[in-house]
Image (cartoon, rainbow, N blue to C red; front, side, top):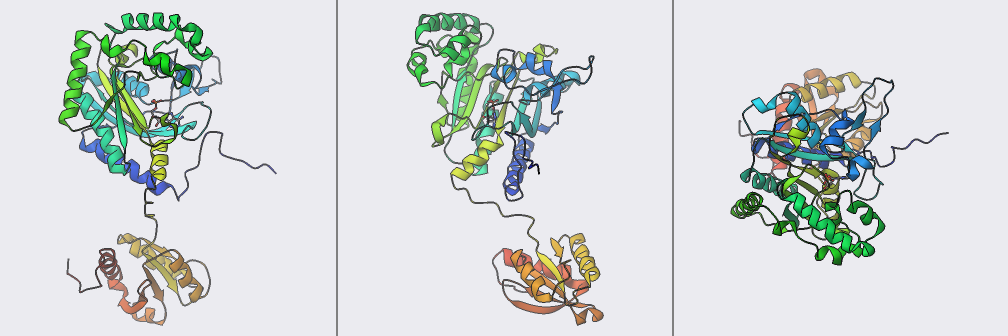
Length: 438
Ligand code: AMP
């Protein structure tokens, strides 16, 4: 008999976990709205060229990790599952003529991304990102706004000790000379480089700077720094980003080795880490400015900046910090039970009326004795059991407060109101005082 399992590197999020995920998604939505970022949804599939061009051919994401989709016919275009959100959002910006909208266009999206990576803790083949993009604003103010928004997201999510790492990686004016200088530097040390890094050296030398290989630590520490080689415009931009961050009281650490893996980044680059996470090697989230990307994808030159915050790693980090679980919102307030084991019609009807009135209610639909029905209501952690018995002919039911162990007769017509009132009093920790009439 075959035993099927979720595909390697993918996971099921079970109802025991989803309340936390829902809370984080609501927080992401709420913050995006407060900061003026409007929701966009792009397809999970794009033409592969969107990523080949937008992310860059010589990146791990495209070279090794792109989930390519084999076309079914000769003429079909070549597709890929999105490994990151920015290229698809910028494709949409160009396709829908958003450059004619008032600029900047500020967009937010939360959804799954796909990378054909070697699965391990905190690294999956399907993972979720909360993504923010401001397209059409050259900064530097918006750079700081976005870095601050990410920091606030972690803080409001309840994660402590998040550190912002910040760098500028220059632009097409100053970076080529720096790249040449860096290449020469590493060539001088070629004999000491691990094979992987020697291979990268001629193809994407900036990546060597954020190598996690211990053999690279000393070589990288002595490497020339981009921040010492910025052109005047980039240096001024970087200084102003820092000034805005200081004014917003966002602490950050300058990290000259932070280059981000993607070709399209210019100037501001940043990542979020949490202190104490094993190895400190996995960023919780990151982003940067991509002033060349809109043009690369066929639009007119337009600056942009954004971040992608991984929700999977955030959830792991919250769990490692022992964050309190989130109450399961699906716990019913009321379970409707009945003395007649066969009468599920009346139970379902009353539960339906309670739900229509806004109360979370479950009808006990198993044909079993009242005692068993009440046991299952208690196991559900319901606040009330509504018990249908002989009083029903007179239009009344018994309302039992399960934790308090008290019970009273309530007319059906008043049931929803009575439940709402007692439930609110209970949740606010007051005794069941008199109705306030509102
Ligand atoms: P990146 O674009 O690689 O910097 O990714 C941005 C964020 O997405 C990372 O900081 C992670 O939180 C998350 N992320 C990237 N790749 C994965 C993955 N394979 N599994 C889980 N989360 C990931």
